[in-house]
Image 1 (tube, rainbow, N blue to C red):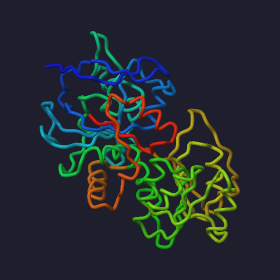
Image 2 (image 1 turned 90 degrees about the vertical axis):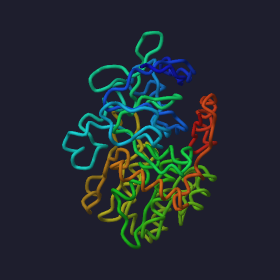
Image 3 (image 1 turned 180 degrees about the vertical axis):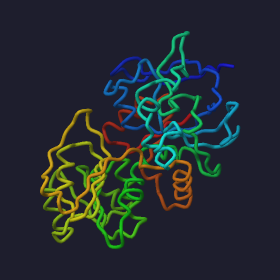
Length: 368
């Protein structure tokens, strides 16, 4: 039985979000209907809405949903109606990387999550006035009061934790945390530098504060963000609008360089500075995504000291284990995600976009 719901539709590239009645198709065997309680707003949503990626429009975006399961398809076993869930990315579940515990590198990741707008079999999950809409965004399209969600996007969570406080775990937070825990894995006494103090960067700062790293440096151009980074665990901050990054990091590290760098800005010039600031055998994790086709020049001889540059998608997380652990850290106050969140009524989505774009709010969360 199809369900009519209200969604924020992007009509064409560059258009604002428009609230509209849409129809959810019947759940496939491995899908569930979720009543959304909250959904985080991410820069990826804005990039797609602007036309930066070839997602089919008109369409419904949203990929940091959290809500309550209302109905499940015939083959769903992981969740049941009434369960509280965080929604994350989907994956095929059968390729080598999925089997190896790395679903963020699924062989079908791009068409299933970011570009296709439909299920793997080509069928649509959403329509309006009898015409299909772009949907299945990250297996969820959660900018809607109800969403048809792929089973592999669903993560069952503790019902005692308010869903609005954990919606961002599905993408931005797990990306920043995973960059530190899953890739850098800081050793005792090490130095971690985070380039950019947005939602992903501040999540990396909070993650680093839960490791044996003793020096945690946050870099940004906004004084308020740097102050917040200190409150969340940064031991040092660098105002990149005032100080030369290389000189500042050399002074902080005594000339040795950084053991780990998380690059979240998507600025290739900043990425180059981060690589140059690495210590011997140091690792830079590339998280920020510049426009497709962007290139960066590196000093090859500078890499011969064992430096590594690693690209990252969604924290390289196995969501069924990773997200519940993050929920527990939020619940116990050890991951103070509330310091990043500003809540907005779903109808105020365009104001949330403006506040995120201007920097007024680090992580807007829509509430339903």
